[in-house]
Image (cartoon, rainbow, N blue to C red; front, side):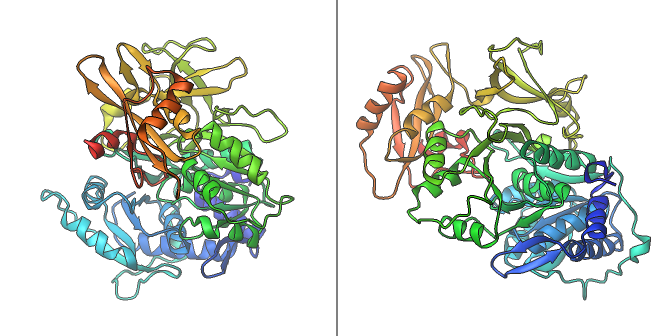
Length: 513
């Protein structure tokens, strides 16, 4: 059985453990511990046996509260191969949002790392009064995993472990909720395997690769790109607990990594770090950017300094991450584009869902085996998002060129409409980021009686750099003209971000009002 023909994630682990039992899957740099495929399969199976012995409802939600590492990884795998829906908790979401997630998901058991216990207790206390479910909490050591002794749970025997199917829900992951309450995305085993396969096809991953995971696996990018990508390709995964610009390159070199996935913010941090890295260019094939548009200036500067190609991509929670990718060198990449479809179909449509010709702006649609089953308990939202013929509406605006490359022009909900003209915030972001003093930038709309909306922006300056608001506005005018230049620019110590590092643009107005 090949990885891509596996019917569920248990098959993926079983095949790898049978064929290369002693090969390493997971390494945690802080502990220098290595977990083989056989050891990983055994650990995940033990968790699955305990969960099936816990008397949970069929396909119940099992929440996971843990930072990146062995415990979080095996908790995810054990939950899904046990036939339950893993519900990773966003550790940056705040108590109110976590309380909503635990309530809405009807979580019955929480696998909770010790350093997350206070946050989980506060979230449970904040759950709506009408919630009758009181989840059982199993504490976890960050490395050794769940502590079952004293839990009262008797595990089923390994031979009696019931297997999930392709259609069994494996993951319930909540969107960031920047435009309202979070939506619970349901992804099946088949969706997750297809998502991992799309990454492998686009980036030509195989068992000789070693990927570095610096994004949290309670976010779809970290989970589906690096965890599922390495599972499908039967390759190695290095997972530090958190990203550190200071230690990043030394970890990459020490563990002989061949690729990594990051977000534009992290590329900016690496560029701003003055460390001279030790690098093995014969081993390090590519880096990968996703979760937010990569400003072309950061793209060019990073490749010039580090001599590593950045493969810009695009993905959504609803599609198990990646839907678009640029090809690997020496094939042509197009800076400013997240690429073409790999493993799924991509189209551009007008508001009536008529498919459009090349170079005409419209909504980006995607269709494929990685597209979610549905939103949990939101049938109307699901129907609005997935058309009758299987297209998922991304909510992103863009155009497709004659070669099939997509150029994203903005989010439908984030468009700035000034005097009847649509202005994409990204264009303003990129103009601001061209200035040497600017580390991060995000434009947004403010209501205006004269134009309907006007343009404003928030920036974060590089350490030790200074510039006045007027000087920065003049810099902008020379690049995008007076009409699109922000009427006001706010200087902040940091910009609000979601778990993937994407700037939460819709929070900026409230932040500076």
